[in-house]
Amino acid sequence: MPVTSRTYWLTSPCRIRRKDESLVIEREAGDKVHIPVTDVRDIVACAETDINTSVTALLNRHRINVHLLSYYGDYAGSLLTSEVSTSGETVLAQARLAQDSPQALAVARSIVDACAFNVRRVVDRKLLDRPYTVLQNSIKEAGSTGQLMSAEGTFRRSAWQVIDTKLPDWLQLDGRSRRPPKNAGNAFISYVNGIVYARTLTAVRLTPLHSGIAFLHSSMERQRHSLVLDLAEMFKPLFAERLLLRMARRNQLKTHHFDRDTNQAMLSDAGRKLVIQTVRDELATTVSHRALGRPVAYDELLYLDALALTRRCLEGTPYKPFRIWW
Image 1 (cartoon, rainbow, N blue to C red):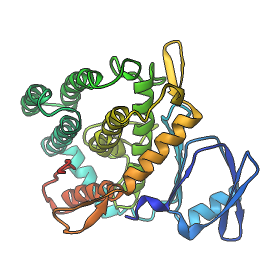
Image 2 (image 1 turned 60 degrees about the horizontal axis):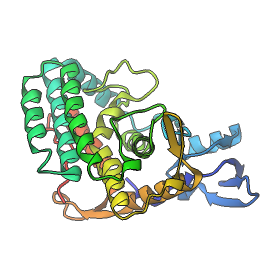
Image 3 (image 1 turned 90 degrees about the horizontal axis):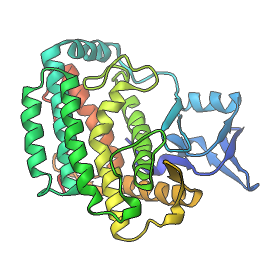
Image 4 (image 1 turned 180 degrees about the horizontal axis):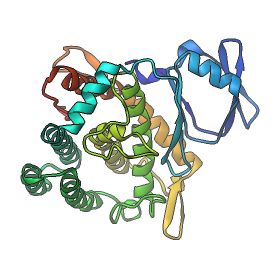
């Protein structure tokens, strides 16, 4: 899994054109940037982007995916290349595991537990200790994914209340709201979550897994990739809640970074550029991996988690979802 330096981010409206084996980014301001396709793994478009069929053919040949985010940061869709990593053997094993209720539920339980562990780690270990214990008991007793997601929702509400005690009034969440976010704090989290989802989709497509066969979220999801929803859960706290708290504490977020109206908010142009740059830097941050014995970028952690689930499907190796250890 390459580091995020091979992800190209489009932060302002532009056109993508083709010149030989290069992509030409034409911005509204009139400037042009030439990028060899060998320097790009995928593209995250955070603003309106115009792509023609010639570019699409070039992207497909070089396996470059384009992920599109809406103005609010919600995942809007992707231009995905043809499947070349997906393995029939793996998909069959993945489907068998997903249809084995006890085994699938075990995977779902581990995902919910790891997600809550990471939330508690980045928000407040002491204040969330009791809600986390309650969640763990609920996880053991849950007999369906619906019950698991309900228990997770209860824990999340406790976490959002704690987060608000650490934020200035104008950034407080006052509960989670989406599509559109109702305030600045929710706008920040929604935007970062959209980026995490796009990066997780890229990671999954580098493995033999099928992105539509899930264990926690419904595999009947049509507009989004269900497995990506599963795996992104553990990584959202690492980026969204953690960065919101850190940037608020450092006074990096200002009111002019958000456009607010009655019952809705979104990042301003300046806000999007700041958040995107912050997430890019974070994705490239490295940490010493305890099992591999080498530094890995945060971006690579998504891929390693997808590989761990691949081994669970093919070899029966216990799946241990990502947990923040540093």
